[in-house]
Image (cartoon, rainbow, N blue to C red):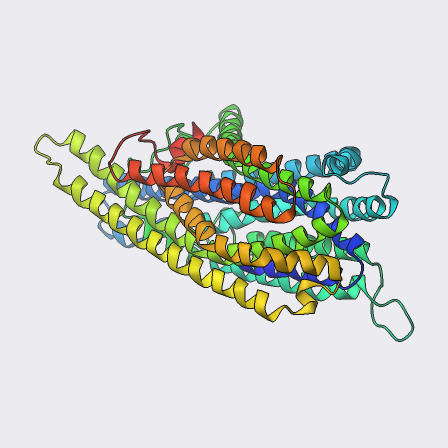
Length: 519
């Protein structure tokens, strides 16, 4: 789904490149602002999925325990054939609260961008001295910022579906949003004459097309959440069966949350108790999202500073930077797909290791051999995914190099000055793909092992070091080969240290993913 989103954004950039460099330069500055404002909340997908899946385990187990208790009391021999009815109250409450917080956060972003949009553009190097560039950038910024609540809701809704074990629905919604964006971009941007079919709104059309596709995606998610019962009192049968098969083998004690979000959700409770539980859930979700957003925010700040440096070098430079960033995003988002699998697999293996160590503490005759076997599985998974990251990084480099050789004007623009800078940069961009792939996969493994604080600190340090180098960059090639490479090299070193920790070389912390997110 991330790759499809990148394709949609690539279509927007390609459409803006079919003209002067001014709209493309305006798009470059605004894209970095939205990248920083919106994509911080992409990390909430992971935290929401973890909270929902953990709540489902507790709800499911509590339903089974309640049925067993009733069976013992009634001494009914046929009661074992009954289908357990699980209230699903905690998972539903987490889902509802996540959506509510996402809409509130999105509304705050819209207000902030409307009030401080001009200052944000100045911070990105877009000055009022260049009237055409400033007007184009402000037009795009204001029209697209209207969709901020929808954008944040997309992330929360995707996390809810992942928490229920459904990854197909987010893929379908992302496909629809990306295809809708691809269709609306040329329709809204071009045309306007008697013989041309389209609205002819220019860069305003690019913003309207993107905002409309995102609002449409959020409405579709809302419809699916209600119709599938993910916000109701009954868990859908298909998703429930999938969840029981994959998750129910773990006991309630194994999945207990450190914060004990809600106690006895299946029992009848007073209104004050329910309000107290809702507040606890809201605080838990807020802390989880803050821990994820902090890491993502420091990373995006480094990217924004890189675009700011390119903007100050002139419209042609920032236009080439925007095209390079769009190409990088499409390739890297495809490479990141393997990272989703790496995170899920590592989360499962790491949780099993935690359960083995927990059982060993409770059992007098337990030995360390089960833990050692689980550590070997973690080591094998880490080695396999790192090798895969290098392989797919080489493939990504080959794809970018082929693009450099082909140099299609409908992708790489026909503006001679922008095209010259971009073609000079593409070989360097291709050489960075193995580094980017290795960083994305290793970070996913570390996230699966629960090293959120470690990653957040390492990313912050890497971003500051990258900005130090970017401040001394004199051209576009040095921005990418210096500052951007330093950013990813620092992140890779941080992730590798985390993997070594997980494989038993040293211990920075022992918390699980959810525990660390909630700390």
